[in-house]
Amino acid sequence: MSKTLFYRKYLLNRVSVGKDVIDYLENLLARDEESLNHSFHKVMVHNWLEDDVQLYNTINEYYNVLFVPVEYASKQNISSFYTSSLSFVTKIVKMDFMFPYRRNMFNIDILFNDKSSSDCFESRITIEEIVSSVVSNRFNNKMELDLSNFCNDPEFAKRKINFYKIDLLANFKILMLRMGRDVKMLNLSNNQLNQVPLEILNFFTRGDMIGLNLSNNNIPSIQEQFRVGSKVEHLWLEGNPLCEELEVNDYIKKILIKFPRLLELDGVRINQHGIIYPFFKHFVISSQKKTKMVVEKFVTMYFNHYDSKPRSKINMFYDMNAVLTISTDFSDYEDLAMPHYEKCVRNIMHPIKRARTENNKCIFKSRNSITKLFEQFPESTHDVNTFNVDVLKHDSGQMLLVIDGIYKEQNTVLEGIYKESYTGDAENKKNISENYLQFRRTFIFNIHTANGISLYHITNEMFTISLADRERKDNSFKFPIRKMNDLSLINPDKAEIKPISKAFKHLTMLKKSEVERRLKAYNWNINLALKKFIEDVRNDIISTEHIEEENSFSDVSSDFD
Image (cartoon, rainbow, N blue to C red; front, side, top):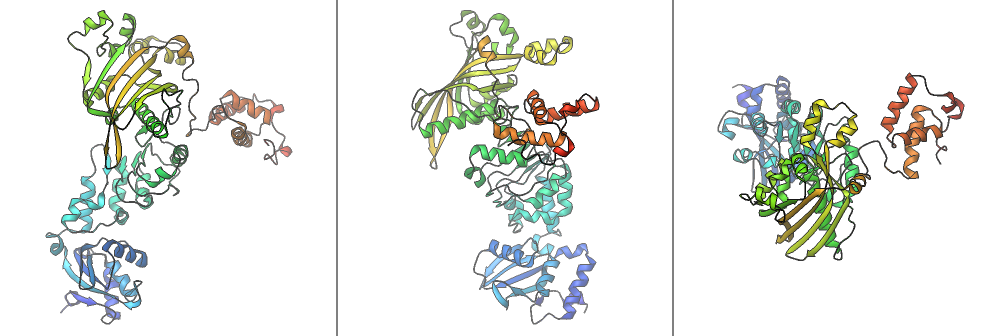
């Protein structure tokens, strides 16, 4: 009888294992044959009192090995599962079957080569092939790999594979390297993650991944060190403890430090002014804490979604049977410049325009029709510094909200005219091809409670638009929110000026007065100031009187005190 047959269904324990068995296991490991992945060994743990996941985690921690268990069972004080990991079995043997749950006692037995893959899965297939199939089926033609709720995939349940934590994917290196090369969007939501899975992310950050979804997990912080060269532009973190414990400003700043190229956070675009926050000038009713919280969240989220392309996510704010009407006060010439409004406006008080839409009342009745309409409108940007927000009513069943302010959008008609013929300054062209509009939007919300949570949906909206007058136009978009992911300062105070001036002086060896002059000239944007400095050095136009003497530059720490 050969050794291979001799060791089939062979009970390994502290008594039965000798040097010949250990030598045999090491020889098998050295051969690394593919057929070994079709052999499954039954691991039996005596007197385990906790659940299966706790058992896997304890074994993983003690033996320092990742494995994918199959067919877990607990009967007569014995918890058992199957594994195809020969290295895991060998470690147990070499550590003399010691296990921390019962210190210094050999409470693990192994039934070696008890089953084949055909016995476990009713076909000759390995765990690696099953996992590869599940992962591949979650990769779509948009280059998105959806690993959400991965451990509960129906294929694992069908084959009784206990994929108890997503970190096990790090074991499948060839698969992960292949997927990491092609994936642009990675979804790791709803996986009960207690920390950012760096072992998995490392496979993808080397590739072209620009989107990462870590929402609805148990991640308490993002202190882990991501790669400096991270290309992530779209990030979702909502539904994690880190979102609840941090104040909003701190939350966004910490995220932007880790992800310097971020364009979108939790589905909200980070625009040219940074994340938008509303500045409310007044409330008609007393702004109770709950009212203020609800309104701030709505205004922040809604107008960021509206200013993002595509606007498809705007539909989540509306009731299924929501009703929208739009009215404008444009001249015929202005209508020509903004044809997207002319065909959807219901102007009851304007007889000429009312006649144009006599057969179409221009009342949009449904969430989908409202979303479809807004998606046809040009790209826009709202100036929240101009917002007036009036809360006319807020009780347990309804909220009535009126918002007016200024926004701008592309003038697609003039832009098309000037695209080929315009030869002037680029900034002037931009101003010509943008419309500055004054709006008033009246929202009526229906409020209902589900599982103790108040849900707000817009049931009616009245949208009124007119061209902004000269004064309003000149006073809008003057005070952008701080751009937290850029090396620039807006209206800086002394405490902010000091470090950026110190850094610029260290890089250029210019005197303090010249440092501040150059930074002020470029609105405290250190990137632009450095570009100009390098250009001046190349052209040799920097006067020696502006350069700090070498022996006086030994200590710059006191120069800006």
